[in-house]
Length: 542
Image (cartoon, rainbow, N blue to C red; front, side):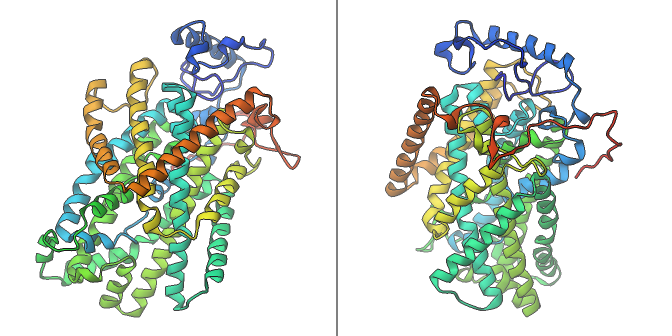
């Protein structure tokens, strides 16, 4: 295992280990267990040495407070992500509610939508989510697939895993300011000039950045609360449909014979709506008791996320069976049909809150991808700087903010295929990483493991691989060309960072703990409290 940032295998508690200060410098051949061409001993021998060193260090260190996640870095349990906070974070990085998905009814009709949203979570969302759970509970550290792929293969694939996730994340993030502003303009029944609209999007971005700077615990708890509030208007619509709708025949309608049926768009919407469950791997180091918290939260989020898409679309279709009307934002129109102006405005506010919270949650996970890569020195260590009080990765948050602000003029159709392409790339690498680590690290304790052998795991992931290939084959030539160019740029950046590190560039020297921001030291994983001096902390699942 990587000596700097991955969980030790010894003892009942997982403590992130680093070489003791008094240790002599490692020989050049042993600087990393990932650069196989430089090793003078095999991986298992190197890992055994690290285990012995970690065990010796652990005897000298105070035990982690509460034995929670975050690598046992001594953060009190109440400040880590609990089950409910994690449910909210997963829900908004993946589903985020049915608002904005209305156009699928226009593209193929109700029957394919019902069948697709009933089956797709089992052959797509569930395998991806459970693979993330297995990896996150075995290696509970920030960075997600960037760290796991580095361990399974080498530093190049670790960097590319983080790069795929970051690109997909910032592309998705670029849509949310536009969509949120559109809902707000509908609510106030106003229009803005292009310049004023850009300023409005910038203001929304600043609000979300400020919320993220409060820390991952704040983001998780806020997301959980809002996941309940935004679904209340849709629940009211569904309850109305249950009591007053008599004709359910529209559920059997399909537009497969219509000239404007778009099956490729429909599949792309399914991938777009029901993906993102792997993003939460980036905050695995922030979890309280990850072996229990992560599996529970993931299953709850997948079930709730899938149902919150399927049921409103089902009843929306029977309340307004004129599918030509179904465009983004049509739920508010249906609300007006059944409840009047007041329900229309409530739906609009809920939709805006849904997109804003989705923005906040995805910015959080994206920032932790970059921070985890900084911890492993795949990017400059300054990106790992955390505020000493909120422990939020401020530099990574601001870096994402800068990229999103430059892209927020893009609309959903322009980036839809592009986002799905990098979603697919990250999914494939994540699933292959899970299989590879089963082969190369079979003895690593896995608090949760998908209950099949390695061969069974390949079959379990097979639908994801097949769907991924199909989506890639459906990409337009333009999108494919852009994706190849972006991937090529990522490869160049990776080798440039490596060369700068070897050349002694100051920005790539040192560790995250040694970085300062305008003279201020960041959070370094230490706490001045001990189990003996700290007052009892109430246990909370939030």
